[in-house]
Length: 390
Image (cartoon, one colour):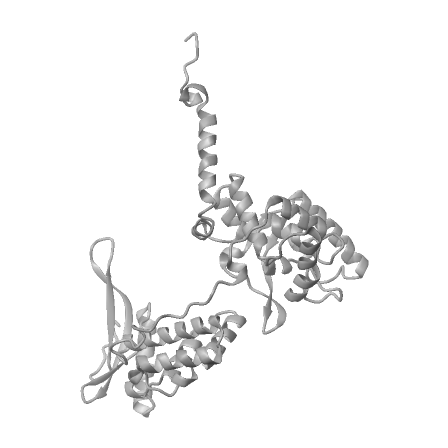
């Protein structure tokens, strides 16, 4: 860094460069390199800023001088996995818990130095997973974390060739809620009608009408809903963390939004608010609360309202997340713009287009039909027609 000339033995910062708009190569990433003596060096992580790389260089120098800087040959797989986990502390509690369990399933590899990790050791671990019937999701996440650790080890010079190159990557089967299996318009109406009289009956018209995630809908507060303007403001979500419901942040920044409500959803919410008052839960923090006014358990909501409503309606059982797919499918088939649908769902246009690619061609047909109507008779746009008598 300018004005901070390093002395011999204090290490350097390596840089990666990219070509800018002017065709010049400029630094875009930095990592520290600290000498260990005898011509050997130890590398740090790549950083997006020079300041972060410089801070790691100084920390590495302090560890080296105290004799606590681990030599590359001493860094184990467990050390690298712990570092990867520490770097994910910003993630949701459930995700972190899943990572903890996945790393525990990698225990056979923890004591092995990363530089000595072999393909046969990884395959032996996969064979144990198969024998112990480790869940597909844990296999996928565990292997992904191991691959991240190896990539970082390669970047730091701990590993030359990846021992995972010839190992097939485990892949979890898609969850039921990820599968595309929407309801028809008739099924949607039947479910909403069948839910009347059940607890959380108003939840299902809201989900069908807005495409909200179930956690977003359960996180609604009474003040978030404006029945006069027919809108709902999404600012938080009620999620399950380690088996208990908690109110927390939304999935993404884009998830914070205001969505319009249909007349049917507003009517259902009006009835729901009256029921809350009758139960003595008018002061509860959340719009959809338990009979005691506490946070709703997702499993209870499904078991006591969703699946009984499906049974009453005679509709094939599906996960309530299919209400989100139903919203997008019906809206696209009705000719709604993808941008508007993505905004309502709190998703990107790219994600909506990719997920519902098989539905998008229908909207193209609607666009062509609209153009034919606009062209009118004779195949010319109305604005280009000649007026008789001129």
